[in-house]
Image (tube, rainbow, N blue to C red; front, top):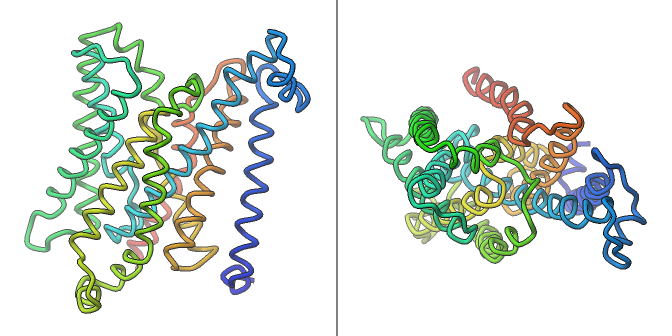
Length: 335
């Protein structure tokens, strides 16, 4: 069965199944919630809009959150795959490596002390914050006699995440108005974001997606080891630098639209490798699709746990991701 999944036919069939699942989940996300609607209502909202609550909910709330979940989930899935490949660390994730924390810290700083509220500016600030955090984590993880190791990277990421969270909370205490503006965003959510938000960031997402898949072959070579890659004529430093830039683009776009959402990029690459093996191109595609699936499921579940209130989607992904993190970490330690 596993061999069938990893055959060319099985991989293509898996993509088709993932797309069908995404279609159904998108439909469910449009229809179900505090206000239940129907597929016909969703169509009428665009073809025969009459200003009713149902039509407003479809156009202003449900459609944007479906598109946000699809695109942000794809970004996080790709970012997780690239980060795990670059660091050769099975528990690498933008949340655990401090990228989300750095982006969030810079955004809160901008809101608190500069008064920035433009999403376009949020996007660039997120990129800058993720870049600075990633660079610091990489430098800290490289210190010592053994050089860069997975354990040191995780510890450095945890330290930077804790430090960023402390500074962020301190700034929010100093400015209660800014705290009100960013508190729900900090918990992570694909709801409450207008389509204009996504439209601003989407061109950067497209660039990052194309660049990620363009790097698939070089990364596959790099996974064989730096010496082998250099022997095959690869400029390993250039590949690593380009991969790092793409990771920052992906995580920065995701944070700008939905806030810091963790653990999606931790879970999906492992699931993707189970289905398609170690071919980086297929792992990236599956991880992106599974990231969208996971985020849509988390978003739908977030509506029903405390209805009519809504649980932030970042909480839902953490409930899924933390047990998975413990499982992967224990499995690695047992080897």
